[in-house]
Amino acid sequence: MLAAIVALWRGFVGRCPVCGRGRMFRSFYTLIEGCALCGRRYEGMGNQNTGAMGISVTLTTLLGFIGGFLLVLYVPDQLVLGLVCLFVLLTIFHAIFYRLARGLWIGLLSITGAMDEDERRDEFFL
Image (cartoon, rainbow, N blue to C red; front, side):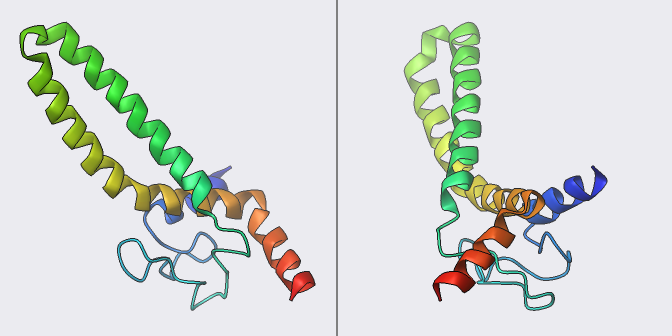
């Protein structure tokens, strides 16, 4: 259980979920193909963005509902301005959190062994 939490945390902060020393990102959004230290590939033949996008969109939507509820509850007289501000903040949050969600998703794939299946499938098809 502790190893799973450590792998998720490593992915969340942008480090290799296996060794914890290699970097996962070349720039803010550009994922490196694999860890330079332990050789773990981060993406197989299929693109691994779907799970990360699901995590990011779910959390952004949840925060939007909570923020909208609080706006209606506490400032109903300035609802339009509040909703515009909430929309801007959620857009910024989503753009920043997507990178973290992508690392978290790769950590989750590493825990479940899905990355190993991708490597075996790549060897079969190549």
